[in-house]
Amino acid sequence: SNVSADALVLWSDMTKTAPTGKSSKSSSYTFTYAGSPAIRKVKLGVKTYNAAHCDDSGNANIQVADTTGILWFTTCADGGTPTVANDLPFTISMWVYRDSGASTDDYFWGRNNASNGYIRAYIEATHGKIIFELSSDNTPNKISVTTSEALFPDGATSTSWKHVVFTYDGSATVAGMRIYIDGEPYVGGFADNSNGTYIGIRPTFSQPFHIGANQVGTNEFDGQIAEVSIWHKALNDED
Image 1: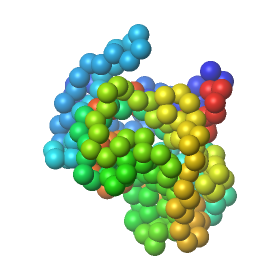
Image 2 (image 1 turned 60 degrees about the horizontal axis):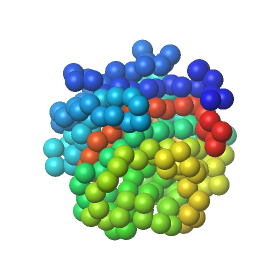
Image 3 (image 1 turned 90 degrees about the vertical axis):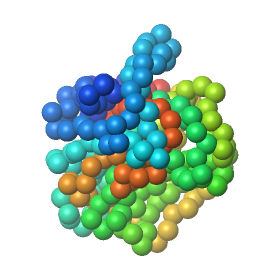
Image 4 (image 1 turned 90 degrees about the horizontal axis):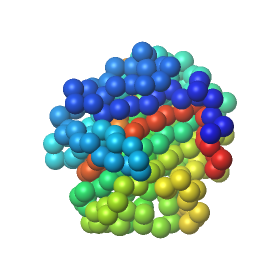
């Protein structure tokens, strides 16, 4: 890998009592479970990991309190008004196994700000496509991409684990947003669903970062999530 160790800002292991952070920045976070997700041992490749079983009916997900704003990916001050120059690059990766074809959107991760703007990624319920978007407010003024193909067909459960990765290069453009599936960049094409004028990520440090849920901790991912990693870098094909 060409990635500096300093670029890794979160690596979460889903232990029985509470998720644990394993990175140089882990002391900056408090990890908790909402809704008591079941924890299972799963084998991914040659290694065994803990996986958290999130589900919408039990509101089970993982929350990361981040009062220093590391997981907001911006140089904008807490509660400040951003410009696009404030945005920072990031990568969010996780292993997922969908065990229920949801009738509602299934969220991989999300975080909300005081203006009801958000950063988030999810499987949309209607067609099973993946949506990745960053919004400054609730207008919404946002940049947003949707995969052209149904990567998680509606009503379909997984037959194997998938590794999903979301990268953003900080450019405030959809061209700077990418999705990788099982180690390969998604090349099936994207629909640009941007709206209004995106002015950058607007942070509210008191709002938690949700894993396996949307920006306000609902619409949970119905299935298992393991090995969540976040970098302050837009990883590329060689990383």
